[in-house]
Amino acid sequence: MNISGIVEFAAVLLILISSVISVISAFGIIRFPDVYTRIHAATKSTTLAVLLTLTGSFFYFWSSESFISVRLILGIVFVFLTAPVAGHLIIRAAYRSKVKLAESSIEDELKAVLHKKE
Image (tube, rainbow, N blue to C red):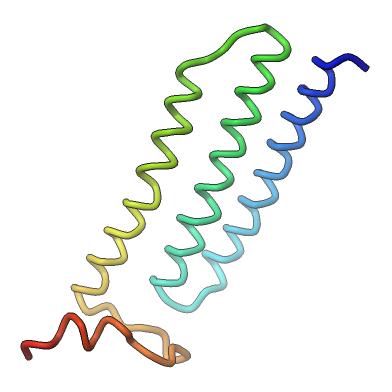
């Protein structure tokens, strides 16, 4: 097995791992009790899954066709920077809109910080 075959195998393995992470993320979105934990499952694990898929695709095209895709590199950077920020902004908007925490939540650490004036 030459080096190209090893890199292709690693690329396929990255894509396979990312699909498993996506399925786990979907279960988290369905199973978690409130919007805060659901968005955590959606942003953290799905971001990792997309990054692994794009990285695996980059390595596959690099090893099989000797093609370095700038679009895939830009996609990796774009997803890495924007997905966590978008998740944070969605959660912040939900919290400021007074979406209730799950009953199993023990402590609301932001309440003391954001509601000092009230």
